[in-house]
Image (tube, rainbow, N blue to C red; front, side, top):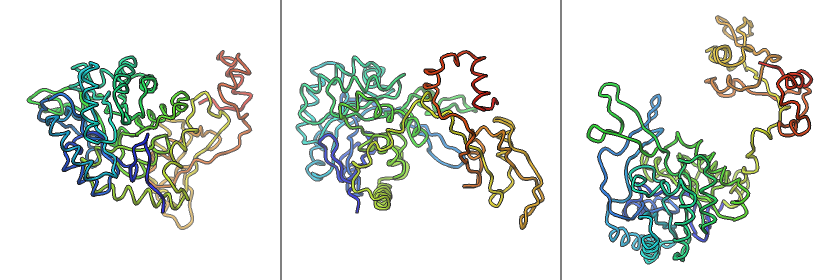
Length: 445
């Protein structure tokens, strides 16, 4: 059996599946119930100064019958008193000593306030703290949350304040609402952070009711920006996690990453792990389906690891990071063409329409007179000599493996753009680029 246990900057957990700081971790009842269901850890809903929440708090993105592919919220930090939260955190850690209990914190931007809450949280016996530098609404308007995380100098300053007082591991939670997430990540590392977590929610306006003209979520006729999460944000989260994990300076620091953003299945979690996350945090999926989804996550990941021969999570962390590259280092000589399996084709012609209207016009409709196949309609046929290998046709095809992209040898030199420019600087001139394309037999579409 694969070993799912992790050691995250000194915080031990029976598996990498943690609940993110959010409504599902707002009380001892919820966190302890989650641990009973199988979750390895939980980041307690952010504690700090008292707040008042509003109604309604959530807006959702539904798509073609699928509910909650995206979730927008304008909920603030815990609206329960700090005293009650601290009491329940202490109780939870006492009842579940082998599970990871991390406490998310956010207070006003003074050294005394941060160091005081560090002492109060550590006194509960919690395993660590997570600094909420990412909340994009409500708190940022008060100079907290993403207002801190968007300024690397502030990120480093507050991290240093906290590290000067903390004796337990400190995780800095980063906001995605920046131009380059690597900058605040490096600032957190420079400030002494024990670990990083990302991403927090993305600034968004969920939508407008076309009958009433009101914003969603609707708070007494008004609305505004909130934090966007859920399955729809996963590709953005994967990009930002991989950007941090592949940064040489952060790699040298050895600081681990807790990945967050759109995780709903064990496959989602594994993608985050392969791109550099040691633990993963889940919120929206639990709000949609409940705590028991962790059972499938544990079984699925464990079975996959057994099938692939991996013994521990740490063997997988960052295994795909080395494949992260930039456009300038892609192989210009790599060429694929699309091929249609007409035994699987349902003659919907979506590939033809997509190629003809928005790609490279290299699919024709022909009468193939296939043996044993109804032939009332024309069949899509790829003109391989004109195929640019863009892969759009296979993406719009509704039948699995009906259209595949096959590598072909065109005789092109295997060279990257960066290598090309370095060896032949004149290709930067358009007329010289045309000549290069002609010599390299690269078609112009």
